[in-house]
Image (cartoon, rainbow, N blue to C red; front, side, top):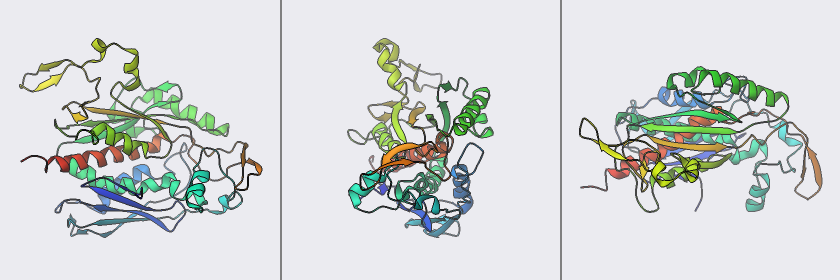
Length: 356
């Protein structure tokens, strides 16, 4: 089964390559009558686009979205929605001299081994540029979720050994690293600038929180919310780990320390005193905040000399040229939010057809 589509009732198919004429996405299964505009979609794309600050790639892409189908007079028709984003700042010559060389940490070798041919320009389909279609599609998903009182917020929790200690949602978009802790954000920016000057890169952790979820979203056994979230978030390039709630930290604790005890609040609603489970039990939402995290590796494209081989097995000393993010985390935030929202809107729509 081709791996370019995601979702069940709300299904997306992305298309395009990093240095091709354009990229885009087809959204199928969006209900009719939803008010949506290019501005709604553009807002999310502007958060993802390259060239935003001195700590991101300097590729200058406006990422201007064009609606080709499925929306008329500002409302969805219930038919497939096609969105296109043209590539504007393509410099493929940076890749010409290494087109036969396998870059460490990239999918060059595996793509060529699988297909016998690959687009070497910027990684082609394996490039993070592919995610522009996901973010565009998720802008529609976000609109549906917001109308149902559901809001998703992502931020950089960690870069290298630096951790956000305070979580201030209002601070996230006020600094280039998208950290919710202003003081730590400054330290993160300094660290990223330092590794960039050294010709290197660094990784980190992005946390995503969803508020306002109803109880009961999620389908056992193979379509638990966390299972679908793991598939969604691990499909983003450069992701090396996924966890829910306390995640791997719970392996160092006792059951009595991890179990979330229940109580009835003043309104009569059943709640949990803690949220170690991250808002999920049995793969089904329990009404608390959904909390997930992804581990992001350091950017593979670095200007340091690295040893590798070409497609014929000859040893090569490689210096990767071009424009690359020294840390993937800041621009991964809107992408991670997008994938979470795509999972949630799919389950929200499914929940409406699974009960009489």
